[in-house]
Image 1 (cartoon, rainbow, N blue to C red):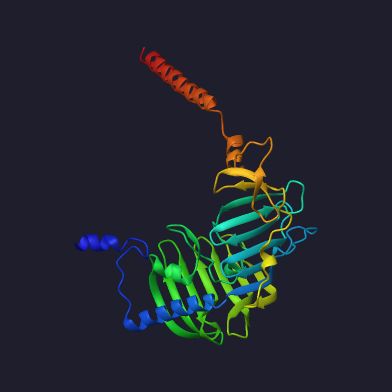
Image 2: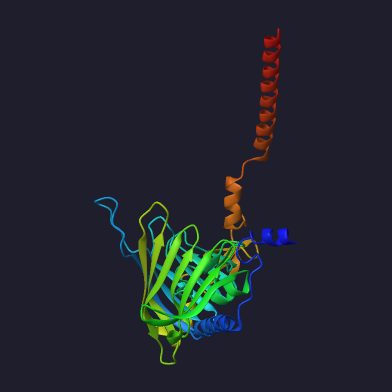
Length: 342
């Protein structure tokens, strides 16, 4: 039994025996979790622009220009969200995406002749989603891999609480949590004065990410929202860089017009419906308007797979050829060994 206990201690954090928290520490962790959950829920609607930029990156070549990384327009009303690209690298298609519940409708390259729409189950938050950018639901767990997690989500899975206490950090009265997971470590500082939202975080994995909220915005009803966040990224063998995320034109918990959640120019566009596994034309409201004409009804993702898939006959040739090569090589080895013996 002792040997088994010692071996179990070699398991990663969250999967090994760990002492239960004392009553005071457990109560503080619950306060942080529940307060953070309520602070996030208090943000019922939001309209803003989100911009990313480098704070300390310098051009690697004299003529290189380092522009803003990305910029988005963002709307949220309950569980309906829209993220529209404003600035994006030239090689990447611009997108305009609406999430309603668990459905994602994405318009690619809006306004261009080859523009089309994909319909899918919601997979993950976009970097242009304020809930991700503002440290509401941006935490990942490597084992098993999960992403876009809130503090409550993290505490619901395997973890260890290495520390939980009240501290004053950089003049801010905070609740400090040091959490360990099977392959990650996350340290959080939550601000009770801003509805227990995270104002500082350090993620430790293969890379180190340090997040810090520089400025909050508070609505008339008391809801709070980070509007300027700095993220310092440290990668082994490279100098650290700092990315700045700034929210502007912020309207927090104000009415959002229904028109904000309407994608433009949908009439007649091709829709690749990954949920039903078919393609069709859309009307102006994003609803089915009729079948495609003289086009094979295969979802984009599947058609790409078909293009890249190797003809099975080639696999047979490769396997047979490899087998023949091994037999010939074995025969040559046997022949030379016999010659040496003679």
